[in-house]
Length: 328
Picture (cartoon, rainbow, N blue to C red):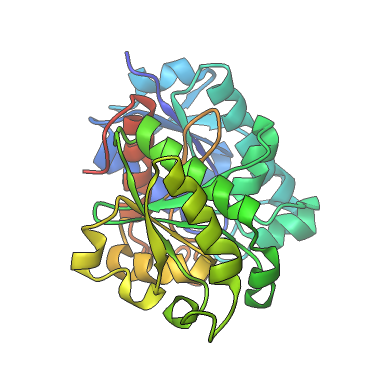
């Protein structure tokens, strides 16, 4: 029987748990997963979805067809939709830790994380990481991890992630960009089964710097890294002007795009793949995916959020853990 995907609770006042219930309806005969969350809270919002409490991840596959498998983890404060509490912040983090333990010891096939509120976990649990990607790298003992956004039509990787735009230029370096491209290429080969991946690399500045007219990062950082990797037979094109990288003809020339900062990668990605996008962490010794959205506190409890991204994230986690090919 197939191993299940471990799904962390995420911010309990957000949309994650209601999307989990909707995802079970779509996946119950397809891909087993189990949720690590508080039984009372889940049952209070479950509606017509049956819940079966499990004690071991190996019980999830058997339970999945008839009920959402739930591994209980106490959240100390009663949860109300759209009203997050810092009292639950430690439990949110513990849900992730427990899911990681299950994947590391082989009890679960892969990890999928529901979205958290970074503000709540920072204030309630002194969470020192920019996001879950960096936290998971810490738990795995990995010094370097990369965030890739994946859909049926596009894969993008930001070299710098959750930092202020004013800090991007100072944070960008040859070593960072080189490791980002190397990690991306390795994942495309090992995880996505693309033997000779083509990678497009953006510039940082308008028109990729216009030969130094609009900035020196292209000449000082990006071009030297590309030249070094091309000499190692990497298939790389760039630095490219970011405003012309994502039309259909341009996308057909690459398997993934590496961009210099968060919004440079995520604006085109979310424009093209808003509901189906999946966040995949590269560089970990296990598979981790996540829906490509936050806890959406503004619509929590109103049944307005769509489960498409979470469903895609669980399916992709299963395919990658089975060394599958790509998103379908």
